[in-house]
Length: 195
Image 1 (tube, rainbow, N blue to C red):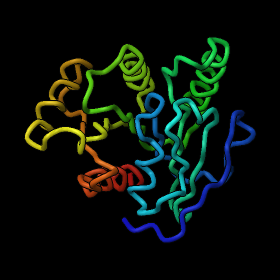
Image 2: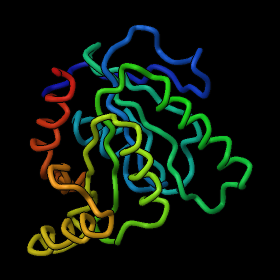
Image 3: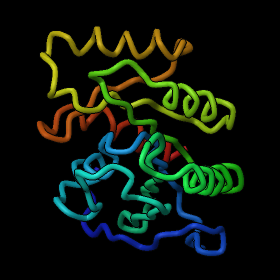
Image 4: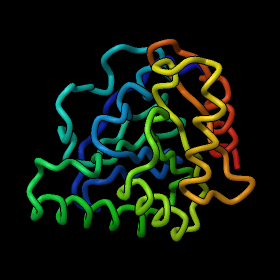
């Protein structure tokens, strides 16, 4: 898919701030600094639409990016950031949960993990929570350029085993740096939007 005029639309923390036009929503979840913003920028071939930061925990709101009025990429705040106070973590967790539980136009949740590491306890909790929502989801094993290409398949298998993934669940490797595997991911997103 070629996106010609992507734009950042709004940052929201309450339902009244969510966009009202009911476009399909592709939701990105993942721990802080796993590469959600880079994932968006890579797919749409833009450098700075979604702001990236080397400092984890920067995104504290739900960011809606309008893709040519076809759908939204919705970037959730990263979880598992240790320097965020417990109070802030709870608050952020609550508005993420509220969004996922009441928003009717979510077509797909994309859980982004780091292919170099076994899933953390926070990753496992998020995976279990996403499964419990009954919303379709896929898993992206990001930063695939950081390991040898011959080890990518094995690393994906480790993620599947650690999360006890059910057969049929899509786990796609991805690399923002090398821009590889993007076609497979676009296929999943397009299928979700067109359902």
